[in-house]
Image (cartoon, rainbow, N blue to C red; front, side, top):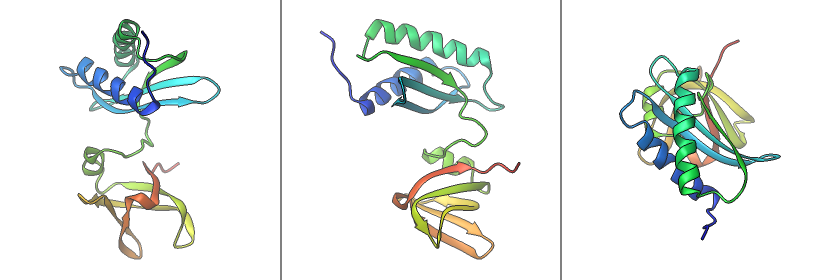
Length: 157
């Protein structure tokens, strides 16, 4: 009998499996997304000190594919993508907020904050109650993370 898993459950399941696959490697799991665009995509983002390469992504993809074929937790047809989170990676986990303290970030708001939906600032940190402290030219400010759509590393072009 095939059990239908909800999006969040698929992401949790895949995160557990990938964590096990990379347990004794220098790789770390950054994020898992299971999203429907035109088709369903299962995206796994991995990283390591110095960045991941194609071989890292291929190894994780092959091992994860075997697990997914064996356990068959996803009813829909989907495309599996394993890649780096990119230079402008989204910050989500506690470790992200620690690792990238002092870096410039793009803070995207759900609704305008001080008249803008985007703020570029230095990340000071995140508290245990999920409040983000940022430093701008006008000083430090602390914002509740629930008001923030996403925080990405800032890239100067």
